[in-house]
Length: 284
Ligand SMILES: [Zn+2]
Image (cartoon, rainbow, N blue to C red; front, side):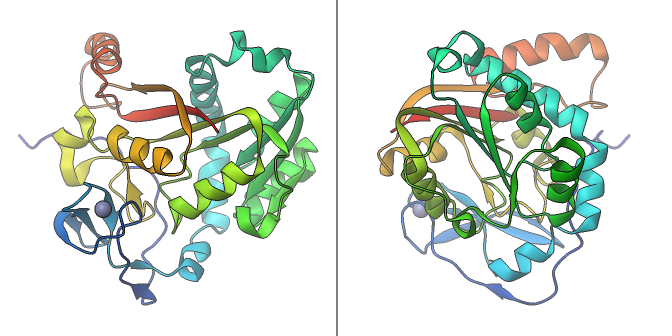
């Protein structure tokens, strides 16, 4: 009997051509060993800092082409799932009891906001919201159907004012961008002093990643970087972020184990820090 594999995260059809080699985004070294290889990607691991990334990887223009109407269909059909996960993330970040909810100045930015469901939720809680989304179809849906303001494009293209947001959120975004260091530097620039950033991304040293290897649901061509708690922590610290909280969650993917095992596995994964997703709460 073959091993049961989780269902992989959606990935766009492979980009043809337009690949380039990059140095390590965390430490700048250019010395790697193969980590995960499939017909659509080669992930390498930096010998000096341990960062896992695709190399060669598609050029930024090619990356942008992936987030088209088929991506919208994926985001739209999964928006309730993603929204519920983001609410769990907010709860884990201590959001509901935090002083942030009591702030006078409630300015919220969601980067990679997809169809804007979280923006609408925050708007209902009296936050002044703004979204940034590269997938035009997803952004237009949010603007038209939810009436939330979304900039269509990348974060640097949005040219947001310095120190203009008290809470910045991005869930399952940083692994998709060509330059995570530049993204975080821009986030730091637009974050208000005393504000918070909430980041979630797949955890490449979690239990599932180690168990499933190439079949891990997050080992896909759309993910240019695969962070661990350690590598993301180091990148955040190198940019002078203060780490408030780190938590992982998710023990077993749907369909890979009987339901009665899922709850204890989820509990253990969180307890041991080997969950499938890692969440950071940081400030500057
Ligand atoms: Zn490195």
